[in-house]
Structures are given as C-alpha cells and as structure tokens.
Image (cartoon, rainbow, N blue to C red; front, side, top):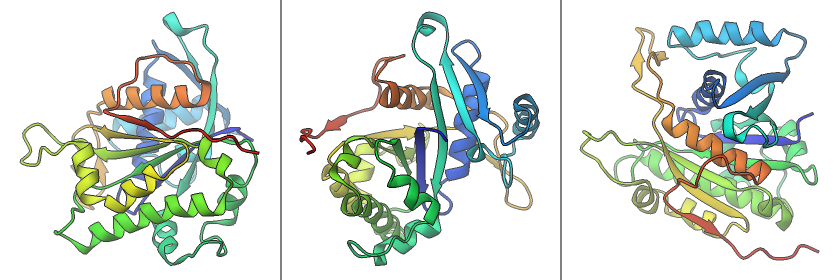
Length: 275
C-alpha cells in the first residue's frame, strides 16, 4: 500500500480522469527530468501498461476503465542535477462528482457520504496526502445555477474533511485548487485569484479556514478537439503547467525542491501543536 496519495476531487466534467492521465503522461515523457516506473501494476508488466497508454495518448485519447492511471502506484526519481534527491512513491485516489454533490446534505459528524474505501483511507494516521481540487471556469456566478453547485460542493468537501478528521489531518494535507488557464486571446482574462474570489467565495472561505496550507493555480493541458461522439481528444498536449504542478506536489511530500515556487500566492496558517 502506498503512503503518499494524490487525492483528486472535482465535479463531473471538471477533468478528474483527464488530470490524472495528463500528469502520468508528463512524468513518463519527461525522461530527462524524471525516471517513472509503476511499482504496483496489479500483476501486469509495467512496460506493457505504459505502451498501452502511449498508444491511446498518441490517438489523443485517455486511458479509461480498468487499467487507467488511478489503478496503479508510481515511483518517480528526479534525474540530472536533482538525481541525489529521494524518489517519490505515490498513488491516486479520486473523489467523484457524485460524492461531492452528496456532501452538502451531509451534516457535521454524520455518516460519511464518501465510499467506504476512501473513508477508511482518510482515517489512517500519518498518511501523506495532497488534495487537488479541480474547478470549471464555465460555471460562473450569475450565469448558471451550476456555479453555485460547484462552489457549494467544493466548500462542503473541505468543511467535511475539517469536521470529520483530526486537526492534524489538515496539517499534513495541503490543498491545490486548479482552474483551467484562460487563453490569451479569450475575452475573459480574469486571473485565478480573481476568478476564485468572484465565483467560488464559499470555497475560498473554507480554504482560508483550513489549518494546513492551500495554493491556487492554473492548468493548460493543450487544445482539445472532440470526436463525433463527443469524446475529448488531445493530440498536442502542453506540459509546462503540469511540470510545475508535479514539482509542487513533490515538494509537499518530500520537502525537497526541484524548482522554485511558482504559484501566484501561497497561504500558510499558523501551525498549532497537536496534542
């Protein structure tokens, strides 16, 4: 069982599976910077899995269903001038949009609305977690009721974690809230901080109440095309933001830097001693 988990949470359509595919795709492709291997391949050959994913990614598709990136664990070893820094072993866990949407109706101390597996995982003492929250810029306040639902879902999830787990949990679980990066030629050039403040006020308040630390960031994975059946296709991925995100994640788990901090702002709460 892995000791480090990237917990990915977002409402349906926000790109949970897309983010996980893109992060693993970057790590496998960044051969000059990292050596990446599957260390829990469920009995399958690691290279066969990577070849299978590579064929799908080459067609612009995501690895879905059985055998997608969230089903495995990874070991990432920095290379080059950072080769002496420790490897990072990690796995993904996902909070589905359905789970998120049930949480606003779950009161403090109520029976968990999350899966039994995830509830048990979050309850393990000293487990190392990074929580990645994915939001959708299309759901904007004043434009669609979904904007309120997105804000309520994300805020309720943060509040749920705070009320159902010990204070020490927040101290070892930094949060990264990611919004899609706005194209330079787009009419809406609002930065991530302004977007979150205007459209996710409850989420921002919950983050500021978090006892650990949180970070806001933007992610551009590339230009998506769509097949006739509506499936998103990504033929020309962009990894600049993804590289920065992984380096931030690596630091949160290992406390070693492989690049300077990059996000617009980083809030840190006063760390209270946990008895």
